[in-house]
Image 1 (cartoon, one colour):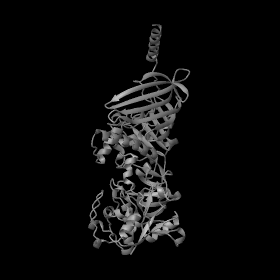
Image 2: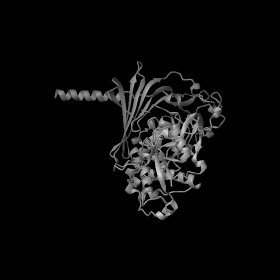
Image 3: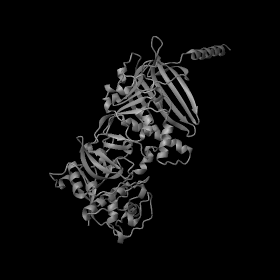
Image 4: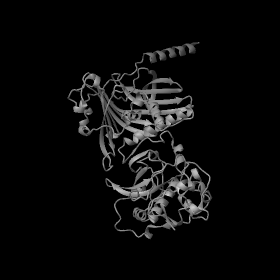
Length: 572
């Protein structure tokens, strides 16, 4: 009985202590630095944030990666007009004033495509007026959870559980207190569980490292202290009104306030005509889209030599995207009979041009779409054959990938399940082989079909094919100039490549070993941009991927294996 009584007293005291414990309320003006850790997107993003809000001035500023990407928010009630400088009143009447956002980021919007710092000015609207950003959550509805240990330090914790439809969300905020009892933020964590999917769908943490409430000068928010305001222009393209753009401008909103990712995914699904079979498939796609969009925006904040963008793969995970990677080595024991060309075998010209593009000559046909089918090997094959045909006969030709997919099985190719260019060459060289034009054989299906090759209608006769070895830049350039576009293999496994948009792709994580090559593409040219040498490569993921279907790879370090195993053919 005594034990029960003591336990009851302990429970009452503990509950009472929780009930009367004050939930932190943070001031309207503060400065904080920290790191956002997005577990499912495997991202760690450092940030610094300022907000100043009083009767005479309101503005917030968020810097990512030590200022590589900056957003300044000037709400309509700020009392100053940023466009004319901080000390001049806004000329608009209140009903016309919806606020202004400034975004300073590194882009490739110059005429030569080089990376430069750009400033965009975006006005608010009646429906979406500009608001102050924030990196500390509103804890009004949180409950005190007691003291816990975080990083070997005892801190206070408050939490909130939220049920929205099938989603059960758990928020936890950890904080310390100074000598005066003021809260010092330590960490904000989110864990989301979807009962319909039976799994967690999102998790992230915001770690706060430096926090202070010292006086903040309005000059922190003056765009002219970052870039010349006169250079700030409109956001390019029609995307400024999309939810994705709003997330890009204020990503913290979706972490500490409310998520806009469901709306952004809805717009994406409409724009790309996505038709999900059921609610479970739609939810899974939405979560993948959120993780991919976070990844895309994060990379674009890092001032890289290339930019990423949303494309048709944005609702796919990495495993699903592998369906497009069809350079797969068959282990049937068959050995290629093609020749191997070493750098020492090539008589190199002393006057090769600084720039070359076979598209301008007419040796490259338009970009095609392999669809969700691992048939890239057939596109690399036909690309180099079309170039060889052009060099021999002086006119373009569109050759049939479907012909190769349907008919080169005996040589070890496997249709949508992958293949290799040299096996296609050997099929064409065989007694029963050859290659018809796309018009004669029939259009590309995006799936395996039945072989109906007619040898009498073949337009390609291969004398031999050659592997270019040695990974030598000068050799590859000389062969490219002499033989036309080259079929090449690359490592296309990285998410940064899947969502490539423009610029010189040079992700150091991209591999270049023979066994790392998983995608066949076509090398059509080379050049130099702002002092960086590049290869120009044609992909087969439609003109809606990359730069109208093309990608430029950095030459240095053989990025992604462009020079690892090029092949070309000699026509009879």
